[in-house]
Length: 332
Image (cartoon, rainbow, N blue to C red; front, side, top):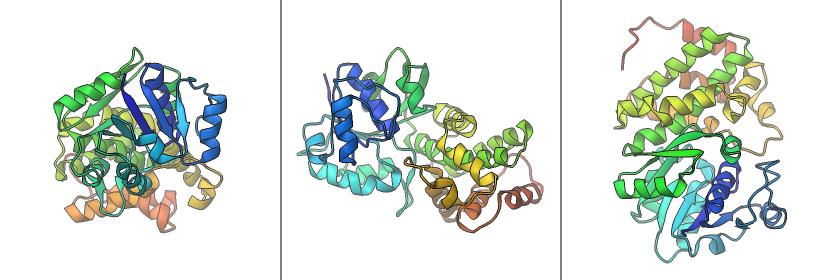
């Protein structure tokens, strides 16, 4: 039995906590909202972030971060990317020695423009860090619908340990060594999913969506190569697999937000009343900044950021994408 602390009680954090608790691990879920933690303990449901899901009574939950993490052997970072620095700084300060850390958030650090594994490594003073990513809608994983993911680490032994920890008959986990590529695929696909949603919101068809997703993958790969990732990573579960899921699935928060923007809503209108975070919004701005830093052209990401933050319409952005200077398909 492994003592696991899951830091972040959104849909994905709750799902992974439930998955591990059902396997017999000793799991404590930290939830920022005290009323949500109390509901999980009392009723075994997280009605705010994972409605309709009956959680195992073996899962413990608390709003006290120190209590959640102090005895953990594995610490799972599941907070939204913009909150990881603050939350995990506090969590790591509460443990006597940094345990193995697993990042499951799909985003980038907004202040320094680095991956979350890089941030967590710095915060922990060099503790081993792994990343879990892939085409994994939380509600489908919760209902044990078969899927696959990758556990990536620069330490092969840690990757195998996390593979064994999470693997179930319905959740197949592969190991991977390209941490940078796996993280970039998981983060940047949210930006392309926003664009794909806008395509659907504008009323375009399958041709447009397929072209957008394919060229989006080219952008992700170009930036990934500039940052040292392996090109084949983006043809795998954390690249193409997660991109297809998030850019086409109706359960995707980013795709859904994109549809609303394509139909003419403002960002504020599209986000009104939403509890969950669409990571692609913040990541779009980070992606553009990274592209400029590394001299990588990201035309789709630039247009998404312009729609989100500069008032451009989705229809204007599509026209500008189509009217760019002709290029070969493979270019840097």
